[in-house]
Image 1: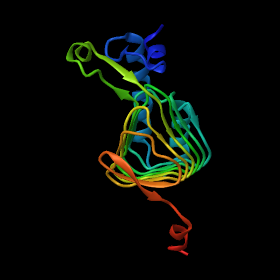
Image 2 (image 1 turned 180 degrees about the vertical axis):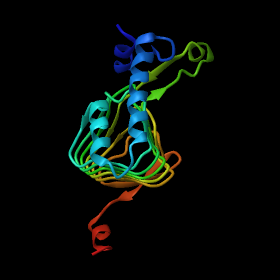
Image 3 (image 1 turned 180 degrees about the horizontal axis):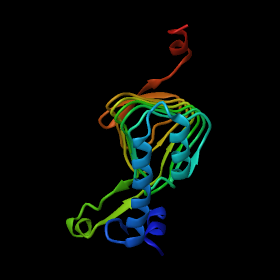
Length: 193
């Protein structure tokens, strides 16, 4: 099993010493460097780079940038995606983002984690668990999403939340650790009518 196959299976893998893993990360960093150098008004040119980096990118993406990731090929993004500045996706495992997802500034989606015991951690071993974000989700500023979390369709994660567990569909979640505050209802829609 290669190190990336171990990562995809949720097993401990060598993230810091295996030449093939380092080569994949370096290739992504080169594409990201090119992306960051292109002006924000040159959206078509930026999109070409993103399509060459990401596993899937739907229609009408907006990346205000900067944007950083580990590998790129594990990231799948649906249509009408918007992210503000400073999105970081550590994608040693799959990150699936649905349609019509809005992400505020300074958000981190982290599939990677490290063993609690120092001996394994110091060997450069880590694990990765997938992250899934449903359609029509809004993630507020400064949110951190940890390995293995799913966020259900239509939910809102409030600014500053640290999401350690799954968030069901159609709710507002907030806090550290994030917890469900309430369901999103028709009353919310009518508040802005």
